[in-house]
Length: 324
Image 1 (cartoon, rainbow, N blue to C red):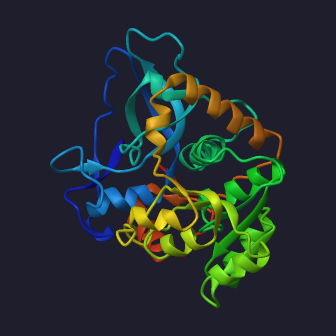
Image 2 (tube, rainbow, N blue to C red; image 1 turned 180 degrees about the vertical axis):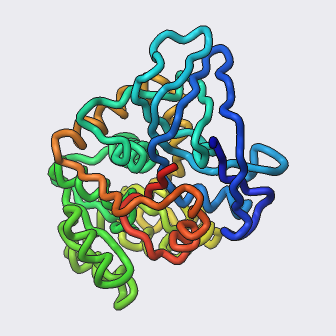
């Protein structure tokens, strides 16, 4: 039986409920896929709680990345056929056994990349792609700081930065997460639960500061991120896991003539050329073993409320996967 996990209204993880559905039929330019793996991300929490505006009045199906098999194709798009393995990242709709999508949002999944890897990497891996190639395009020899280094984005970033010859400093909460981040390629990892991470970054850079900070945490870190940037450094604020960084003011940038950008993934993926090119880069570094996608043990799709609770409590590491 096909089913979806629905949030009837904004609220806590306990509001998520399973509902049986009929697999939808693809319209012109659409593809019907059967999910084999679904990724879980903090953006799902933002939507569930109402921190991000809902695209519907009620009954929102969350989930922004997945992998699966094409079951039917609508008119007007010939790139995919039934049986093709595909992956995608779009806002919402993934917490279901079946769904339709615009064909232009899908990419072919190569044989040497597993479904679970793709479902755990499309949103997070493409996020890392734009962060380190566009938001602040790293150069070999740069030193940068990445917050939440043990998370899904953080672990991919550490490995990809190392492959590029970049010195990456990470922050994480607790000894276990620091160990995971270190294993992901970070040159140094700071436990922000047991000391002044700002001073530690300054020591690690001999007082100069870092070229860029990739900050997906928000209110808990934003002012410290500014403090550790070198002159003309770049602050990349791409998330708010601890809350919106409302204490930030433009005048803070004057401390070192800093640059600020607040990018979002889906502005990048709106370009099919960017999507296919970035996905090809991502799949290549995964297949070559330069970036490992740590997915752990997948959880059943209908246990997603428990997964959300663990994610909000920062008890998860790497990429979290749901299996229909």
